[in-house]
Image 1: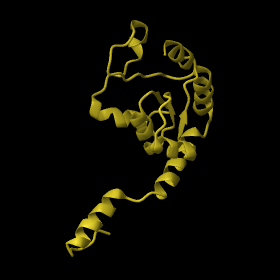
Image 2 (image 1 turned 180 degrees about the horizontal axis):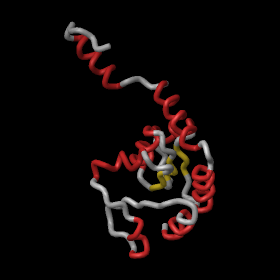
Image 3 (image 1 turned 120 degrees about the horizontal axis):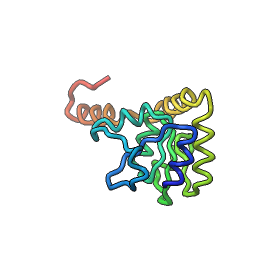
Image 4 (image 1 turned 90 degrees about the vertical axis):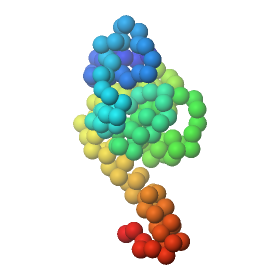
Length: 144
């Protein structure tokens, strides 16, 4: 992790969110925001790299590309990998290669935001679906 931060710092500003203590050498990269603001940080980031599937997936839904550094295979991550919003690898070399490509591409932000819009357009609005199901069973007005 330290080597990853050292290498990424050569061409990007690196912020770290961590529930645990960080090594002293990484403390200067710790992002000091309240937990409820983490999605703002993810949205305005150029890239998310981490072991957490939830954060990787949330980043993808926000249109921020993610590198999921974990061996665990999850259905929702696999779907986002197919779309090209999530990359999964444990290899430092591959993480660096993917990161450099994303962070140095001039149209990267627009490209990933478009991928997000396309991905979400193919999904149902779960809140609307549940409301319509409940309301229709109660013979109430259906939400449009």
